[in-house]
Length: 377
Image 1 (cartoon, one colour):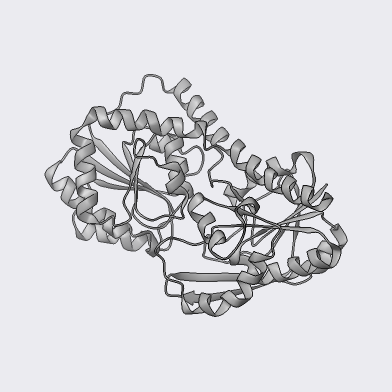
Image 2 (cartoon, rainbow, N blue to C red; image 1 turned 90 degrees about the vertical axis):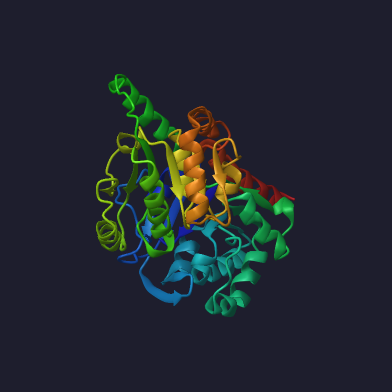
Protein backbone atom coordinates (compact mmCIF):
# COMPACT_ATOMS: atom_id res chain seq x y z
CA UNK A 1 0.00 0.00 0.00
CA UNK A 2 1.28 3.44 -0.96
CA UNK A 3 0.69 6.31 1.46
CA UNK A 4 1.48 9.95 0.68
CA UNK A 5 1.47 12.61 3.38
CA UNK A 6 1.16 16.22 2.23
CA UNK A 7 2.13 18.82 4.81
CA UNK A 8 3.16 22.45 4.61
CA UNK A 9 6.47 21.60 6.30
CA UNK A 10 7.93 18.67 8.24
CA UNK A 11 7.71 20.07 11.76
CA UNK A 12 9.86 18.42 14.39
CA UNK A 13 6.95 17.13 16.43
CA UNK A 14 5.49 15.35 13.38
CA UNK A 15 8.71 13.43 12.59
CA UNK A 16 8.12 10.58 15.10
CA UNK A 17 4.58 10.14 13.77
CA UNK A 18 5.80 9.96 10.18
CA UNK A 19 8.53 7.50 11.19
CA UNK A 20 5.97 5.14 12.67
CA UNK A 21 3.53 5.51 9.78
CA UNK A 22 6.29 4.65 7.31
CA UNK A 23 7.28 1.35 8.93
CA UNK A 24 4.99 -0.98 6.96
CA UNK A 25 4.11 1.12 3.92
CA UNK A 26 5.50 2.53 0.69
CA UNK A 27 5.59 6.00 2.18
CA UNK A 28 6.52 9.51 1.10
CA UNK A 29 6.05 12.97 2.61
CA UNK A 30 5.55 15.90 0.24
CA UNK A 31 6.24 19.29 1.78
CA UNK A 32 6.89 22.90 0.87
CA UNK A 33 9.06 25.86 1.81
CA UNK A 34 9.70 27.27 5.27
CA UNK A 35 7.90 30.38 6.45
CA UNK A 36 10.83 32.34 7.82
CA UNK A 37 10.59 33.82 11.34
CA UNK A 38 7.59 31.62 12.19
CA UNK A 39 7.07 28.17 13.71
CA UNK A 40 6.08 26.81 10.29
CA UNK A 41 9.53 25.52 9.34
CA UNK A 42 10.86 22.04 8.65
CA UNK A 43 13.04 20.14 11.08
CA UNK A 44 16.58 19.39 10.02
CA UNK A 45 17.01 15.98 8.40
CA UNK A 46 18.01 13.45 7.46
CA UNK A 47 14.77 11.58 8.10
CA UNK A 48 14.11 7.85 8.32
CA UNK A 49 11.44 8.10 5.64
CA UNK A 50 11.25 9.27 2.04
CA UNK A 51 10.52 12.94 1.39
CA UNK A 52 10.02 15.25 -1.55
CA UNK A 53 10.40 18.99 -1.16
CA UNK A 54 8.18 20.87 -3.59
CA UNK A 55 8.89 24.24 -5.12
CA UNK A 56 6.39 26.43 -3.31
CA UNK A 57 5.20 30.01 -3.16
CA UNK A 58 4.60 31.13 0.44
CA UNK A 59 1.48 33.22 0.98
CA UNK A 60 0.94 35.01 4.30
CA UNK A 61 -2.19 36.85 5.37
CA UNK A 62 -2.66 38.76 8.59
CA UNK A 63 -5.80 37.89 10.51
CA UNK A 64 -7.27 39.31 13.69
CA UNK A 65 -6.44 36.05 15.53
CA UNK A 66 -3.06 35.29 13.94
CA UNK A 67 -1.38 34.89 10.59
CA UNK A 68 -2.58 32.53 7.88
CA UNK A 69 0.43 30.88 6.23
CA UNK A 70 -0.46 29.12 3.00
CA UNK A 71 1.99 27.48 0.59
CA UNK A 72 1.17 26.98 -3.06
CA UNK A 73 3.21 23.91 -3.99
CA UNK A 74 3.72 23.91 -7.73
CA UNK A 75 3.80 20.50 -9.32
CA UNK A 76 2.11 18.70 -6.41
CA UNK A 77 -0.53 17.14 -8.64
CA UNK A 78 2.08 15.74 -11.03
CA UNK A 79 4.24 14.45 -8.16
CA UNK A 80 1.22 12.57 -6.83
CA UNK A 81 0.54 11.12 -10.27
CA UNK A 82 4.17 10.00 -10.44
CA UNK A 83 4.12 8.37 -6.98
CA UNK A 84 0.53 7.10 -7.42
CA UNK A 85 -0.41 6.67 -3.72
CA UNK A 86 -3.49 4.67 -2.73
CA UNK A 87 -4.18 7.05 0.15
CA UNK A 88 -3.24 10.70 0.64
CA UNK A 89 -3.12 11.95 4.23
CA UNK A 90 -3.19 15.73 4.15
CA UNK A 91 -3.18 18.68 6.48
CA UNK A 92 -6.50 20.40 7.09
CA UNK A 93 -7.58 23.96 6.34
CA UNK A 94 -4.07 25.34 6.92
CA UNK A 95 -3.03 23.76 3.61
CA UNK A 96 -6.30 24.09 1.72
CA UNK A 97 -4.81 25.41 -1.55
CA UNK A 98 -2.69 22.29 -1.95
CA UNK A 99 -5.63 20.17 -0.85
CA UNK A 100 -7.39 21.17 -4.08
CA UNK A 101 -4.66 19.37 -6.06
CA UNK A 102 -4.96 16.36 -3.75
CA UNK A 103 -8.73 16.26 -4.17
CA UNK A 104 -8.40 16.35 -7.96
CA UNK A 105 -5.81 13.56 -7.93
CA UNK A 106 -7.94 11.34 -5.70
CA UNK A 107 -11.09 11.84 -7.76
CA UNK A 108 -9.41 11.36 -11.13
CA UNK A 109 -7.55 8.21 -10.08
CA UNK A 110 -10.14 6.87 -7.61
CA UNK A 111 -7.80 7.08 -4.63
CA UNK A 112 -8.59 7.91 -1.01
CA UNK A 113 -8.15 11.24 0.77
CA UNK A 114 -7.90 11.64 4.55
CA UNK A 115 -7.91 15.12 6.10
CA UNK A 116 -5.90 15.48 9.32
CA UNK A 117 -6.83 18.65 11.13
CA UNK A 118 -7.57 20.71 14.19
CA UNK A 119 -11.20 21.42 13.37
CA UNK A 120 -11.78 24.72 15.13
CA UNK A 121 -10.85 26.29 18.45
CA UNK A 122 -13.83 26.63 20.74
CA UNK A 123 -14.92 30.18 21.39
CA UNK A 124 -12.78 31.64 18.62
CA UNK A 125 -14.58 33.77 16.07
CA UNK A 126 -13.71 33.16 12.46
CA UNK A 127 -11.74 35.93 10.78
CA UNK A 128 -13.25 37.69 7.78
CA UNK A 129 -10.64 35.98 5.57
CA UNK A 130 -11.61 32.52 6.87
CA UNK A 131 -15.30 33.26 6.32
CA UNK A 132 -14.50 34.22 2.74
CA UNK A 133 -12.45 31.06 2.19
CA UNK A 134 -14.88 28.61 3.81
CA UNK A 135 -16.82 28.01 0.55
CA UNK A 136 -13.54 26.65 -0.86
CA UNK A 137 -12.39 24.79 2.27
CA UNK A 138 -15.54 23.08 3.55
CA UNK A 139 -16.61 21.30 0.32
CA UNK A 140 -13.25 19.50 0.14
CA UNK A 141 -13.38 18.64 3.86
CA UNK A 142 -16.85 17.15 3.38
CA UNK A 143 -15.67 15.06 0.44
CA UNK A 144 -12.74 13.52 2.30
CA UNK A 145 -13.05 9.75 2.70
CA UNK A 146 -12.14 10.06 6.38
CA UNK A 147 -11.12 12.66 8.93
CA UNK A 148 -8.40 12.43 11.56
CA UNK A 149 -9.17 15.05 14.22
CA UNK A 150 -6.61 16.30 16.74
CA UNK A 151 -9.13 15.99 19.57
CA UNK A 152 -12.67 15.08 20.56
CA UNK A 153 -13.35 18.81 20.68
CA UNK A 154 -12.07 19.19 17.12
CA UNK A 155 -14.24 16.32 15.91
CA UNK A 156 -17.32 18.40 16.77
CA UNK A 157 -16.48 20.80 13.94
CA UNK A 158 -16.41 18.01 11.38
CA UNK A 159 -19.74 16.65 12.63
CA UNK A 160 -21.18 20.15 12.44
CA UNK A 161 -20.34 20.50 8.74
CA UNK A 162 -22.08 17.22 8.01
CA UNK A 163 -19.44 14.48 8.18
CA UNK A 164 -20.71 11.18 9.58
CA UNK A 165 -19.27 10.09 12.90
CA UNK A 166 -18.11 6.74 11.46
CA UNK A 167 -15.79 8.66 9.12
CA UNK A 168 -14.12 10.61 11.95
CA UNK A 169 -11.15 9.24 13.90
CA UNK A 170 -9.86 11.09 16.96
CA UNK A 171 -6.07 10.89 17.26
CA UNK A 172 -5.28 13.05 20.29
CA UNK A 173 -2.26 15.17 19.46
CA UNK A 174 0.61 14.15 21.75
CA UNK A 175 4.39 14.38 21.82
CA UNK A 176 6.66 11.38 21.33
CA UNK A 177 5.80 9.91 24.72
CA UNK A 178 8.16 6.95 24.28
CA UNK A 179 11.13 9.26 23.73
CA UNK A 180 10.11 11.45 26.66
CA UNK A 181 9.79 8.48 29.00
CA UNK A 182 13.20 7.22 27.91
CA UNK A 183 14.72 10.66 28.64
CA UNK A 184 13.03 10.79 32.05
CA UNK A 185 14.28 7.30 32.95
CA UNK A 186 17.84 8.17 31.88
CA UNK A 187 17.73 11.38 33.93
CA UNK A 188 16.57 9.56 37.05
CA UNK A 189 19.37 7.01 36.75
CA UNK A 190 22.01 9.74 36.76
CA UNK A 191 20.29 12.18 39.14
CA UNK A 192 18.89 9.86 41.82
CA UNK A 193 20.27 12.04 44.61
CA UNK A 194 18.54 15.21 43.44
CA UNK A 195 16.51 16.81 46.22
CA UNK A 196 13.71 19.18 45.33
CA UNK A 197 13.95 22.59 46.97
CA UNK A 198 11.19 24.07 49.10
CA UNK A 199 10.56 26.69 46.43
CA UNK A 200 7.22 26.39 44.62
CA UNK A 201 8.09 26.54 40.93
CA UNK A 202 5.63 27.60 38.24
CA UNK A 203 6.50 26.72 34.65
CA UNK A 204 5.72 27.91 31.14
CA UNK A 205 7.10 26.02 28.14
CA UNK A 206 6.43 27.10 24.58
CA UNK A 207 6.96 29.69 21.91
CA UNK A 208 7.11 33.22 23.27
CA UNK A 209 4.58 34.80 20.92
CA UNK A 210 1.91 37.48 21.50
CA UNK A 211 -0.99 35.00 21.23
CA UNK A 212 0.38 32.97 24.15
CA UNK A 213 -0.91 35.54 26.70
CA UNK A 214 2.24 35.27 28.80
CA UNK A 215 1.73 38.79 30.19
CA UNK A 216 -1.30 37.49 32.07
CA UNK A 217 0.80 34.70 33.60
CA UNK A 218 3.53 37.15 34.65
CA UNK A 219 1.02 39.58 36.16
CA UNK A 220 -0.73 36.82 38.09
CA UNK A 221 2.59 35.44 39.30
CA UNK A 222 3.61 38.93 40.46
CA UNK A 223 0.66 38.96 42.88
CA UNK A 224 1.35 35.37 43.89
CA UNK A 225 5.05 36.05 44.50
CA UNK A 226 4.32 39.16 46.56
CA UNK A 227 2.33 36.96 48.96
CA UNK A 228 4.61 33.91 48.82
CA UNK A 229 8.25 34.86 48.41
CA UNK A 230 9.37 31.22 48.15
CA UNK A 231 8.06 30.97 44.59
CA UNK A 232 9.59 31.18 41.12
CA UNK A 233 8.31 31.40 37.57
CA UNK A 234 10.40 29.59 34.94
CA UNK A 235 9.82 30.50 31.29
CA UNK A 236 11.26 28.06 28.75
CA UNK A 237 11.30 28.84 25.04
CA UNK A 238 12.20 31.43 22.45
CA UNK A 239 10.22 33.56 20.07
CA UNK A 240 9.47 37.01 18.75
CA UNK A 241 8.11 38.23 22.11
CA UNK A 242 11.04 37.13 24.26
CA UNK A 243 12.91 40.46 24.44
CA UNK A 244 9.75 42.41 25.24
CA UNK A 245 8.79 39.96 27.99
CA UNK A 246 12.27 40.11 29.52
CA UNK A 247 12.06 43.89 29.53
CA UNK A 248 8.59 43.73 31.08
CA UNK A 249 9.93 41.55 33.91
CA UNK A 250 12.81 43.98 34.54
CA UNK A 251 10.43 46.94 34.59
CA UNK A 252 8.37 45.18 37.24
CA UNK A 253 11.51 44.32 39.24
CA UNK A 254 10.75 40.60 39.11
CA UNK A 255 14.10 39.43 37.72
CA UNK A 256 14.96 37.57 40.95
CA UNK A 257 11.89 35.35 40.76
CA UNK A 258 11.22 35.07 37.00
CA UNK A 259 13.83 33.05 35.13
CA UNK A 260 14.07 32.87 31.34
CA UNK A 261 15.76 29.68 30.13
CA UNK A 262 15.53 30.32 26.40
CA UNK A 263 15.05 27.53 23.91
CA UNK A 264 16.21 24.18 25.29
CA UNK A 265 18.30 21.84 23.17
CA UNK A 266 18.31 18.27 24.32
CA UNK A 267 16.12 16.54 26.88
CA UNK A 268 13.54 18.85 28.44
CA UNK A 269 13.63 16.87 31.69
CA UNK A 270 16.97 18.54 32.49
CA UNK A 271 15.11 21.84 32.95
CA UNK A 272 11.64 20.83 34.14
CA UNK A 273 12.42 17.96 36.54
CA UNK A 274 11.77 19.98 39.71
CA UNK A 275 8.86 22.16 38.57
CA UNK A 276 5.51 21.98 40.33
CA UNK A 277 2.87 23.18 37.91
CA UNK A 278 2.72 24.17 34.24
CA UNK A 279 0.54 27.07 33.14
CA UNK A 280 -0.68 27.50 29.57
CA UNK A 281 -2.32 30.95 29.66
CA UNK A 282 -3.04 31.21 25.92
CA UNK A 283 -3.14 29.09 22.80
CA UNK A 284 -1.15 25.89 22.66
CA UNK A 285 -1.53 22.15 22.50
CA UNK A 286 1.43 19.78 22.53
CA UNK A 287 2.89 21.40 25.64
CA UNK A 288 -0.02 19.99 27.67
CA UNK A 289 0.84 16.43 26.62
CA UNK A 290 4.54 17.13 27.16
CA UNK A 291 4.17 18.41 30.71
CA UNK A 292 1.77 15.65 31.76
CA UNK A 293 4.28 13.12 30.43
CA UNK A 294 6.86 14.74 32.74
CA UNK A 295 4.50 14.38 35.71
CA UNK A 296 3.71 18.09 35.92
CA UNK A 297 0.06 19.12 36.49
CA UNK A 298 -1.40 21.64 34.05
CA UNK A 299 -3.47 24.79 34.48
CA UNK A 300 -4.82 26.11 31.20
CA UNK A 301 -7.53 28.04 29.42
CA UNK A 302 -8.64 27.36 25.87
CA UNK A 303 -5.99 25.51 23.87
CA UNK A 304 -6.23 23.62 20.59
CA UNK A 305 -8.85 21.23 21.97
CA UNK A 306 -6.52 18.42 23.07
CA UNK A 307 -6.59 19.69 26.64
CA UNK A 308 -10.20 18.48 26.91
CA UNK A 309 -9.06 14.90 26.22
CA UNK A 310 -5.89 15.07 28.31
CA UNK A 311 -6.95 16.93 31.47
CA UNK A 312 -9.50 15.29 33.74
CA UNK A 313 -9.51 17.42 36.89
CA UNK A 314 -7.20 14.99 38.68
CA UNK A 315 -4.09 15.88 36.68
CA UNK A 316 -4.81 19.53 36.00
CA UNK A 317 -7.34 22.32 35.66
CA UNK A 318 -9.11 23.71 32.60
CA UNK A 319 -10.80 27.09 32.93
CA UNK A 320 -12.10 28.62 29.70
CA UNK A 321 -12.28 31.99 31.49
CA UNK A 322 -8.78 31.82 32.97
CA UNK A 323 -7.54 35.25 34.07
CA UNK A 324 -5.03 36.76 36.50
CA UNK A 325 -7.24 36.46 39.58
CA UNK A 326 -8.38 32.90 38.86
CA UNK A 327 -4.85 31.77 38.13
CA UNK A 328 -3.67 33.34 41.38
CA UNK A 329 -6.29 31.33 43.29
CA UNK A 330 -5.37 28.07 41.54
CA UNK A 331 -1.67 28.57 42.29
CA UNK A 332 -2.42 29.49 45.88
CA UNK A 333 -4.57 26.37 46.35
CA UNK A 334 -1.87 24.05 45.02
CA UNK A 335 0.86 25.67 47.09
CA UNK A 336 -1.18 25.47 50.28
CA UNK A 337 -2.23 21.86 49.65
CA UNK A 338 0.95 19.84 49.05
CA UNK A 339 -0.87 16.48 49.24
CA UNK A 340 -3.27 17.59 46.51
CA UNK A 341 -0.33 18.71 44.38
CA UNK A 342 1.46 15.40 44.99
CA UNK A 343 -1.62 13.45 43.90
CA UNK A 344 -2.00 15.57 40.76
CA UNK A 345 1.63 14.90 39.84
CA UNK A 346 1.07 11.14 40.09
CA UNK A 347 -2.08 11.40 37.97
CA UNK A 348 -0.26 13.57 35.44
CA UNK A 349 2.35 10.86 34.88
CA UNK A 350 -0.32 8.21 34.34
CA UNK A 351 -1.96 10.17 31.50
CA UNK A 352 0.36 8.49 28.99
CA UNK A 353 -1.23 5.10 29.74
CA UNK A 354 -4.12 6.15 27.49
CA UNK A 355 -2.78 9.08 25.50
CA UNK A 356 0.54 8.07 23.98
CA UNK A 357 2.18 8.09 20.58
CA UNK A 358 1.34 4.42 19.92
CA UNK A 359 -2.39 5.03 20.33
CA UNK A 360 -2.05 8.25 18.34
CA UNK A 361 -0.52 6.50 15.32
CA UNK A 362 -2.92 3.56 15.68
CA UNK A 363 -5.89 5.89 15.20
CA UNK A 364 -4.35 7.24 11.99
CA UNK A 365 -3.78 3.68 10.80
CA UNK A 366 -7.39 2.88 11.68
CA UNK A 367 -8.51 5.70 9.39
CA UNK A 368 -6.29 4.35 6.59
CA UNK A 369 -7.69 0.84 7.01
CA UNK A 370 -11.22 2.25 7.03
CA UNK A 371 -10.88 4.04 3.69
CA UNK A 372 -9.17 1.06 2.07
CA UNK A 373 -11.95 -1.27 3.26
CA UNK A 374 -14.45 1.18 1.79
CA UNK A 375 -12.61 0.95 -1.52
CA UNK A 376 -12.92 -2.85 -1.49
CA UNK A 377 -16.62 -2.59 -0.78
